[in-house]
Length: 266
Length: 277
Image (tube, rainbow over all chains, first blue to last red; front, side, top):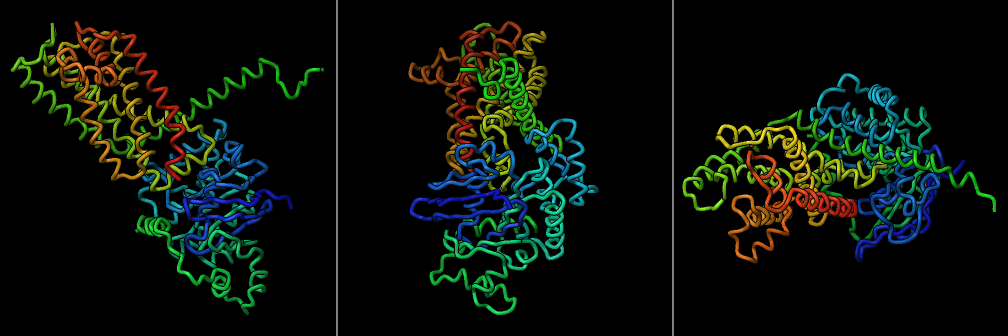
């Protein structure tokens, strides 16, 4: 399978803090790839760099063959991104939230309405399309955002903790939609998560990050074999790879963001 | 060496490509502005609360100072003189806190999605600037109504009216972009509120909005002439009033405002991505 995403010694430092330390990673076209790790492991930093929001300190990365530093505009044209916080604009309707992005993504005028309607229908939001997003539930907002990020049919979709703070029913619905997305459009999906059940549901392969470095990469079965944890106790496996004697989790910002997302869900 | 046709498209194609790029750019600017206007339509209450301040300035400050006759305003009555100044003030106040909405959008993650889209940064900035212009126009309507009620002698000819519309949009775009740059530097709402307060009053008082620059001490006159608000007020005074005139020259007013806006937009385009880092 063709490699659609490659990082080579990708590094990001914030002052003295090494957020991501010489990461080598490849993702193949069409796979659902999970990034795991505790708070502060470097997941969000990695996603921010791959989506061109944050320049790397050193190293390089390409998405769809385009370099994130020398051709960021080309990268932006072929990726979709759903940030961790529930970020659809609450002062606009669901339809309006989609309409604006059809214009920002250069979708031809003749196609716009069809893409918006299709996105709404695909995510099960047709009935709520003309309500203000401020009145949506958390699961609906998340589905709207995924629709928003798929309008231009990106080759790679980045989902940063797609179900953080959602109730179990809403999570199942979001998972279902992500799976359908992958089968219907063949989109490569890179997602970060804290939840082992989510990864098990969705991901073909996973990478586990630990303090900015790669702790392990492979299918869940491979990782389980490598950890020597018997059976299917994935949480133990996760603990095996991320075990840290120093308490390093819970960067203030990440914790605040997670809380904030939870708060918006009420 | 034979020319390489595939690497170098014919000049007509290049031109067409460039024209298409300009169109796409314009379309994105309008998309961002359109979204802001739609938000305003969903909840227009903000526009009404914003009407209170110009009302106080014209009704209370204006009426009192018109009686005192302390400020020499030439052929114009003080209220006539004041009305364009208060419109400029409304434009400034609408625009100067614009940056806070960008900080808010950053906190929510809305901004990240815009920055990840293939939209030139300056188009995002200009879209915001244009929507500030639309907000400011709603203020212009309020000031016009007040001025009419108070008997200010207004110029209703279509040419000058169009000029006022342009000036209001230009001024709001300028100050909102300035505000955006500050937001990108200070990055948090609390710090922004502090700085916004500190900036607004000097910009307002070190201008010709409520008194002519002639009566200022020299040092203040210098500052006033470096203050874009002075050119905004001067232009408005020439175009809004029946018998109003510009003391700096309308051409200079428009030139200073347009150039300042261009520089600020270019600068803001550079600063914009830093707010999410």
